[in-house]
Image (spheres, one colour):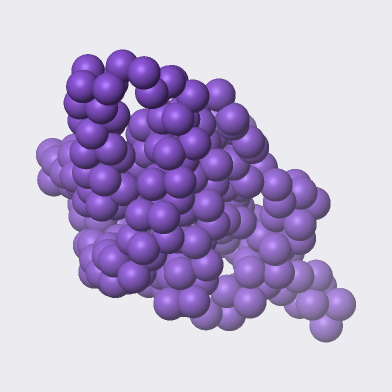
Length: 263
Protein backbone atom coordinates (compact mmCIF):
# COMPACT_ATOMS: atom_id res chain seq x y z
CA UNK A 1 0.00 0.00 0.00
CA UNK A 2 2.83 2.38 0.79
CA UNK A 3 4.54 1.69 -2.53
CA UNK A 4 1.24 2.22 -4.40
CA UNK A 5 0.65 5.52 -2.62
CA UNK A 6 4.20 6.64 -3.39
CA UNK A 7 3.77 5.69 -7.06
CA UNK A 8 0.47 7.58 -7.23
CA UNK A 9 2.08 10.65 -5.65
CA UNK A 10 4.97 10.51 -8.13
CA UNK A 11 2.68 10.25 -11.16
CA UNK A 12 0.53 13.06 -9.81
CA UNK A 13 3.55 15.31 -9.35
CA UNK A 14 4.86 14.41 -12.79
CA UNK A 15 1.57 15.33 -14.44
CA UNK A 16 1.52 18.65 -12.57
CA UNK A 17 5.08 19.29 -13.72
CA UNK A 18 4.06 18.71 -17.35
CA UNK A 19 1.19 21.20 -16.98
CA UNK A 20 3.54 23.84 -15.57
CA UNK A 21 6.16 23.24 -18.28
CA UNK A 22 3.59 23.89 -21.02
CA UNK A 23 3.50 27.53 -19.88
CA UNK A 24 7.04 28.01 -18.58
CA UNK A 25 8.69 26.54 -21.68
CA UNK A 26 7.10 28.82 -24.32
CA UNK A 27 7.57 31.88 -22.12
CA UNK A 28 11.31 31.24 -21.64
CA UNK A 29 11.81 30.39 -25.30
CA UNK A 30 10.03 33.56 -26.48
CA UNK A 31 11.01 36.15 -23.86
CA UNK A 32 13.74 38.70 -24.66
CA UNK A 33 17.38 37.96 -23.79
CA UNK A 34 16.86 34.34 -22.64
CA UNK A 35 14.82 33.63 -25.75
CA UNK A 36 17.38 35.06 -28.18
CA UNK A 37 19.01 32.84 -30.78
CA UNK A 38 22.41 33.25 -29.14
CA UNK A 39 21.26 31.22 -26.11
CA UNK A 40 21.58 27.46 -26.81
CA UNK A 41 18.40 25.42 -26.79
CA UNK A 42 19.89 23.08 -24.17
CA UNK A 43 20.22 25.99 -21.74
CA UNK A 44 16.60 27.01 -22.36
CA UNK A 45 15.35 23.45 -21.79
CA UNK A 46 17.36 23.09 -18.59
CA UNK A 47 16.12 26.47 -17.33
CA UNK A 48 12.55 25.48 -18.18
CA UNK A 49 12.89 22.28 -16.15
CA UNK A 50 14.50 24.06 -13.20
CA UNK A 51 11.90 26.84 -13.15
CA UNK A 52 9.06 24.33 -13.39
CA UNK A 53 10.45 22.32 -10.47
CA UNK A 54 10.69 25.49 -8.38
CA UNK A 55 7.11 26.46 -9.22
CA UNK A 56 5.72 22.97 -8.60
CA UNK A 57 4.88 23.49 -4.90
CA UNK A 58 3.92 27.15 -5.43
CA UNK A 59 1.32 27.38 -8.20
CA UNK A 60 -2.29 26.08 -7.92
CA UNK A 61 -2.11 23.42 -10.63
CA UNK A 62 -3.70 19.97 -10.45
CA UNK A 63 -3.03 16.80 -12.42
CA UNK A 64 -6.66 16.78 -13.64
CA UNK A 65 -5.89 19.87 -15.76
CA UNK A 66 -3.69 17.73 -18.02
CA UNK A 67 -5.92 16.39 -20.86
CA UNK A 68 -5.99 12.67 -21.45
CA UNK A 69 -6.49 12.90 -25.22
CA UNK A 70 -3.95 13.95 -27.81
CA UNK A 71 -6.28 16.65 -29.18
CA UNK A 72 -6.84 18.11 -25.72
CA UNK A 73 -3.10 18.15 -25.05
CA UNK A 74 -2.54 19.94 -28.36
CA UNK A 75 -5.14 22.56 -27.49
CA UNK A 76 -3.52 23.05 -24.07
CA UNK A 77 -0.08 23.57 -25.62
CA UNK A 78 -1.43 25.98 -28.27
CA UNK A 79 -3.21 28.07 -25.65
CA UNK A 80 -0.09 28.28 -23.51
CA UNK A 81 2.07 29.20 -26.53
CA UNK A 82 -0.38 31.96 -27.49
CA UNK A 83 -0.41 33.24 -23.91
CA UNK A 84 3.39 33.30 -23.71
CA UNK A 85 3.69 34.77 -27.21
CA UNK A 86 1.42 37.72 -26.41
CA UNK A 87 3.33 38.58 -23.24
CA UNK A 88 6.72 38.21 -24.92
CA UNK A 89 5.71 40.22 -27.97
CA UNK A 90 4.45 43.05 -25.77
CA UNK A 91 7.88 43.33 -24.12
CA UNK A 92 9.74 42.91 -27.40
CA UNK A 93 8.04 46.08 -28.65
CA UNK A 94 10.47 48.06 -26.49
CA UNK A 95 13.52 46.28 -27.90
CA UNK A 96 12.03 46.59 -31.38
CA UNK A 97 11.89 50.37 -30.91
CA UNK A 98 15.61 50.38 -30.08
CA UNK A 99 16.28 48.31 -33.20
CA UNK A 100 14.28 50.67 -35.43
CA UNK A 101 16.00 53.75 -33.99
CA UNK A 102 19.43 52.23 -34.53
CA UNK A 103 18.62 51.28 -38.12
CA UNK A 104 17.40 54.78 -38.97
CA UNK A 105 20.38 56.55 -37.38
CA UNK A 106 22.76 54.07 -39.03
CA UNK A 107 21.29 54.84 -42.44
CA UNK A 108 21.58 58.58 -41.81
CA UNK A 109 25.23 58.11 -40.84
CA UNK A 110 25.90 56.19 -44.02
CA UNK A 111 26.59 52.94 -42.15
CA UNK A 112 23.61 51.03 -43.50
CA UNK A 113 25.91 48.69 -45.43
CA UNK A 114 28.18 48.07 -42.40
CA UNK A 115 25.81 45.62 -40.76
CA UNK A 116 26.59 43.22 -37.94
CA UNK A 117 24.65 40.43 -36.26
CA UNK A 118 22.30 41.57 -33.54
CA UNK A 119 22.65 39.08 -30.62
CA UNK A 120 19.11 39.81 -29.41
CA UNK A 121 17.17 39.24 -32.65
CA UNK A 122 19.77 37.20 -34.56
CA UNK A 123 19.46 39.40 -37.64
CA UNK A 124 21.71 41.88 -39.40
CA UNK A 125 21.59 45.36 -37.92
CA UNK A 126 23.48 48.65 -38.11
CA UNK A 127 26.32 49.02 -35.58
CA UNK A 128 24.42 51.82 -33.83
CA UNK A 129 21.40 49.54 -33.42
CA UNK A 130 23.57 46.77 -31.98
CA UNK A 131 25.18 49.22 -29.54
CA UNK A 132 21.86 50.65 -28.38
CA UNK A 133 20.37 47.16 -28.11
CA UNK A 134 23.23 45.95 -25.90
CA UNK A 135 22.85 49.02 -23.67
CA UNK A 136 19.08 48.44 -23.50
CA UNK A 137 19.64 44.80 -22.48
CA UNK A 138 22.11 45.83 -19.78
CA UNK A 139 19.65 48.41 -18.42
CA UNK A 140 16.87 45.79 -18.54
CA UNK A 141 18.96 43.40 -16.45
CA UNK A 142 20.18 46.16 -14.12
CA UNK A 143 16.62 47.16 -13.17
CA UNK A 144 15.64 43.46 -12.79
CA UNK A 145 13.36 43.66 -15.80
CA UNK A 146 13.62 39.91 -16.33
CA UNK A 147 11.89 39.49 -12.97
CA UNK A 148 8.77 40.91 -14.62
CA UNK A 149 8.34 37.67 -16.55
CA UNK A 150 8.84 35.38 -13.59
CA UNK A 151 6.56 37.46 -11.34
CA UNK A 152 3.88 37.62 -14.03
CA UNK A 153 4.37 33.90 -14.69
CA UNK A 154 3.71 32.96 -11.06
CA UNK A 155 0.74 35.31 -10.72
CA UNK A 156 -0.75 34.26 -14.06
CA UNK A 157 -1.81 30.89 -12.64
CA UNK A 158 -4.24 32.75 -10.40
CA UNK A 159 -5.79 34.59 -13.36
CA UNK A 160 -5.49 32.18 -16.31
CA UNK A 161 -6.00 28.45 -15.84
CA UNK A 162 -3.82 26.19 -18.01
CA UNK A 163 -5.40 25.82 -21.45
CA UNK A 164 -8.03 28.50 -20.70
CA UNK A 165 -7.21 31.72 -22.51
CA UNK A 166 -9.62 34.48 -23.55
CA UNK A 167 -8.50 36.93 -26.24
CA UNK A 168 -10.80 39.91 -25.77
CA UNK A 169 -11.10 43.26 -27.49
CA UNK A 170 -9.12 44.81 -24.62
CA UNK A 171 -6.21 42.44 -25.34
CA UNK A 172 -6.28 43.36 -29.02
CA UNK A 173 -6.40 47.08 -28.20
CA UNK A 174 -3.49 46.68 -25.78
CA UNK A 175 -1.36 45.03 -28.45
CA UNK A 176 -2.21 47.75 -30.97
CA UNK A 177 -1.30 50.44 -28.45
CA UNK A 178 1.96 48.63 -27.78
CA UNK A 179 2.72 48.60 -31.50
CA UNK A 180 2.00 52.33 -31.79
CA UNK A 181 4.13 53.05 -28.74
CA UNK A 182 7.02 51.14 -30.33
CA UNK A 183 7.25 53.68 -33.17
CA UNK A 184 6.83 56.63 -30.80
CA UNK A 185 9.62 55.28 -28.59
CA UNK A 186 11.84 54.75 -31.64
CA UNK A 187 11.44 58.43 -32.57
CA UNK A 188 12.22 59.47 -29.00
CA UNK A 189 15.40 57.36 -28.95
CA UNK A 190 16.71 58.52 -32.30
CA UNK A 191 15.67 62.18 -31.96
CA UNK A 192 18.98 63.69 -30.68
CA UNK A 193 21.29 61.92 -33.13
CA UNK A 194 18.82 62.11 -36.00
CA UNK A 195 18.30 65.88 -35.57
CA UNK A 196 22.06 66.49 -35.47
CA UNK A 197 22.59 64.41 -38.62
CA UNK A 198 19.73 66.24 -40.37
CA UNK A 199 21.33 69.62 -39.73
CA UNK A 200 24.68 68.19 -40.78
CA UNK A 201 23.18 67.11 -44.11
CA UNK A 202 21.60 70.54 -44.58
CA UNK A 203 24.91 72.25 -43.81
CA UNK A 204 26.79 70.06 -46.28
CA UNK A 205 24.16 70.76 -48.92
CA UNK A 206 24.62 74.51 -48.43
CA UNK A 207 28.41 74.15 -48.57
CA UNK A 208 28.18 72.06 -51.74
CA UNK A 209 26.20 74.85 -53.44
CA UNK A 210 28.22 77.79 -52.16
CA UNK A 211 31.73 76.24 -52.35
CA UNK A 212 31.62 73.66 -55.15
CA UNK A 213 35.41 73.21 -54.98
CA UNK A 214 35.06 71.19 -51.76
CA UNK A 215 34.67 67.45 -52.52
CA UNK A 216 31.56 67.09 -50.41
CA UNK A 217 31.16 63.35 -51.07
CA UNK A 218 34.64 62.69 -49.67
CA UNK A 219 34.29 65.05 -46.72
CA UNK A 220 30.67 64.30 -45.93
CA UNK A 221 30.97 60.58 -45.17
CA UNK A 222 33.48 60.77 -42.28
CA UNK A 223 31.83 63.95 -41.02
CA UNK A 224 28.41 62.26 -40.81
CA UNK A 225 29.91 59.29 -39.01
CA UNK A 226 31.72 61.54 -36.54
CA UNK A 227 28.63 63.67 -35.85
CA UNK A 228 26.48 60.56 -35.47
CA UNK A 229 28.86 58.82 -33.06
CA UNK A 230 29.27 61.97 -30.96
CA UNK A 231 25.54 62.50 -30.54
CA UNK A 232 24.87 58.78 -30.02
CA UNK A 233 27.32 58.95 -27.12
CA UNK A 234 25.87 62.18 -25.77
CA UNK A 235 22.32 60.79 -25.97
CA UNK A 236 23.12 57.96 -23.53
CA UNK A 237 22.37 60.26 -20.60
CA UNK A 238 18.92 60.75 -22.16
CA UNK A 239 18.63 57.09 -23.22
CA UNK A 240 18.99 55.71 -19.67
CA UNK A 241 15.99 57.39 -17.97
CA UNK A 242 13.88 56.85 -21.08
CA UNK A 243 14.43 53.09 -21.04
CA UNK A 244 14.00 52.86 -17.27
CA UNK A 245 10.65 54.65 -17.56
CA UNK A 246 9.51 52.22 -20.26
CA UNK A 247 10.60 49.19 -18.25
CA UNK A 248 8.65 50.50 -15.26
CA UNK A 249 5.66 50.92 -17.55
CA UNK A 250 6.04 47.27 -18.59
CA UNK A 251 6.02 46.28 -14.93
CA UNK A 252 2.57 47.86 -14.61
CA UNK A 253 1.04 46.78 -17.93
CA UNK A 254 2.32 43.20 -18.24
CA UNK A 255 0.29 41.85 -15.27
CA UNK A 256 -2.77 43.73 -16.52
CA UNK A 257 -2.37 42.15 -19.95
CA UNK A 258 -2.06 38.69 -18.41
CA UNK A 259 -5.05 39.30 -16.12
CA UNK A 260 -7.13 40.39 -19.10
CA UNK A 261 -6.54 37.06 -20.85
CA UNK A 262 -8.14 35.26 -17.94
CA UNK A 263 -11.60 36.20 -19.13
